[in-house]
Length: 320
Image 1 (tube, rainbow, N blue to C red):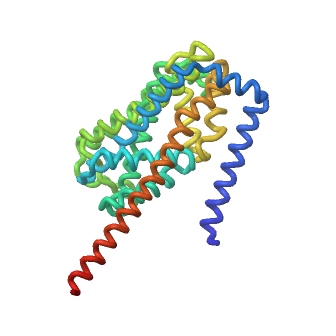
Image 2 (image 1 turned 60 degrees about the vertical axis):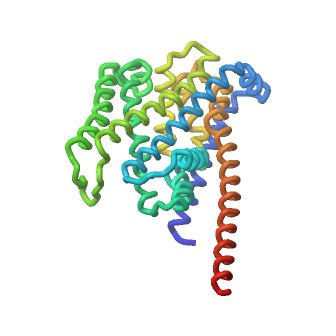
Image 3 (image 1 turned 90 degrees about the horizontal axis):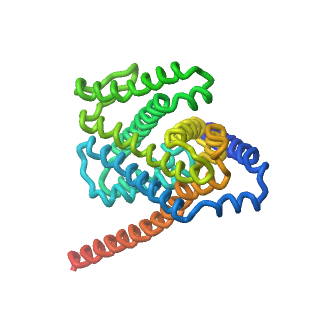
């Protein structure tokens, strides 16, 4: 086994250990009966509303891939993009190292439809930049609109919190400005990249921010069952949680999400709310994505066999 594989497996084991420790810290204060009762206390209508926000988020995520393909000057039917995006991200969110894991599934689909490995790599980078822009933009808005919670969590005064929020909002503005003024390849040290068109850059900021607002709305639905929590408190909690998940790469954010949200909104973060949110945004999409992956693989293999059989028949006919 190579040293690289040993390091990656070691990091995965460490991440799982961290997840297990955090989950133990959270669940040890609850009995099984309390957990079940907490989950059952969430109204069915509320859970369905949260599911709608989760579905809207995954639909929004498909726009990341759509914009990436547009920026490459390529064209694919939107139904194919939705399929590849949903399967890739529903599995990638739960596996961990989302950029790599979802990228592997993206390559599986897009390579079948005529895109090169270089194109897929650019799509993954584009989507990663869109995620960053959305998280920074929504985080900046949360720091400005809800400076009190952020100041308490970051242990700084509200005035400094608003200043950090303004600095965060400057990032998407600068990005869009660079896309507007610079049409040649942009060089940064040893790297060079081609910025998208201005309209696509603005769309990146928009869909990236909307996506995280939808996920925050999904979480907010669960938290409001257990307390009167303002929407931007949920936004602050989720932005911090997602930042921690991206930093740790723990599979599915297990433990990290629960610990961060519990710290951000301790009164409303019932274990039932967190489990219900995880079911709505992670587990149910994972089940659907896995099913779609299996079905799509079966269909693809049948079509491949049919194409091979047709080729053989044509070869036999020509030989006759």
